[in-house]
Length: 117
Image (cartoon, rainbow, N blue to C red):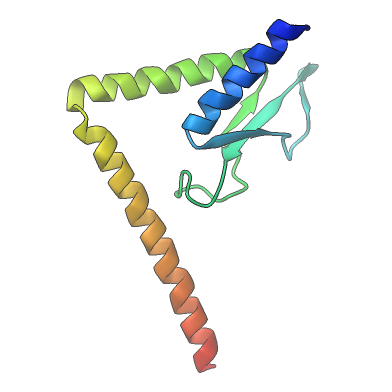
């Protein structure tokens, strides 16, 4: 894969990943697998995918494998919307916010415990 079409494909994939709360990065386990260049995906910031640690690689593979993986994520989300309706999206967002709140409380308790000691 080379040329401007490759650049457009990578930009499109980066945008799809961004919408899912992910960012492409170099794998901490190496950049080659079975003789192919690979990339990894991890949460893009503190607010994205709060159940994962910030350095968790939720995907590792080639660009072609990433395209298939993203189609699977999109299919699963569309299926959930069909079965559960829009309330599923709101429920996922609520659970993610609950996890962010839990993490914040944990940090605040740690700071309070340090002040007491």
